[in-house]
Amino acid sequence: MFKLVTHNKNKYEEMKKIISDLEMVSMEYAEIQADTLEEVIDFSLDTLSTVIEGNFIIDDSGLFIDALGGFPGVYSAYVFKTIGNEGILKLMTSESNRRAYFKTVIGIRFNGINYKLVGICHGTISTKESGNNGFGYDPIFVPEGYTKSFAEMSTEEKNKVSHRGKAVRKLAAFLERFA
Amino acid sequence: MFKLVTHNKNKYEEMKKIISDLEMVSMEYAEIQADTLEEVIDFSLDTLSTVIEGNFIIDDSGLFIDALGGFPGVYSAYVFKTIGNEGILKLMTSESNRRAYFKTVIGIRFNGINYKLVGICHGTISTKESGNNGFGYDPIFVPEGYTKSFAEMSTEEKNKVSHRGKAVRKLAAFLERFA
Image (cartoon, rainbow over all chains, first blue to last red; front, side, top):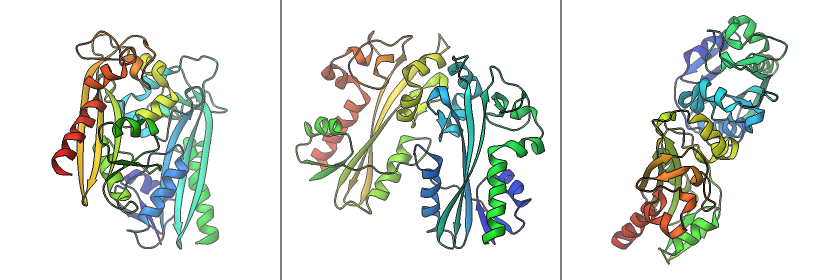
């Protein structure tokens, strides 16, 4: 039995499809300010292990834009809440370098040890928003090998190539092998 | 005797002028992601109190821009490091609302209790960078009642009106009264 620590019911429903023996622990917890998602996850795994009994899972994601020095990165949620996609597009004045990647890090506390699984999706920032599916930066992110944004894809199509999809499949393989 | 926990020697030298009985403890510590500086400071005071003996002081500052929903706020240092003043100016497409404020929160752990002292400086975001003094967002911030930026002021002139100056003077009064 694993616990997923999140206050996002959608994440739980999505992961439950892959890991049937999953319980949702709905709580907010402190995340640290750091340059990498891995540091954030490690800190949270350590602090949560003092209040949650048994094995549990957390995750964190971010959008990292080359021409902006990795911005918004670890603070993607905050940046989306304040300046949004409109703000990102204003910052993207370079026509030539629009490379970016989405990254998810899943943290697992398993028998007292921290494990981290990473999923990355490379792509580019488009010049305008398009599509109504997904959430967050999906309308301005075009994954490599596609000509449409994440927000123009169905959930199934997006999961095949997305950072989150990749990380969740690694999680399923991890659990099948070890748990 | 108070300890100032920071890895910034300039901050220490500045505060030492006001509080002669001050020792610098040079260490990095985890700050949490939060919507307010106050939450960040409270968390750090609590966690640092488990590793630092006796009374100590920490501080954190941010720039909060009205038209950007408070961005860059608590993450001002990270945002400066990535998109910088150039990025902020690109985001400021509103000619009419350029209001912003700088805020410093000083956290004091004194005999096992947390105290927070706040200094705020209201002003506007200019349309271009000017001046070479100061650091960070100083070249684009014009304090209320002035027509020049923080970066065009001498340190003494800036300290009279700045968020940090105000908070540090409150700290001096606090220590004189209670410590």
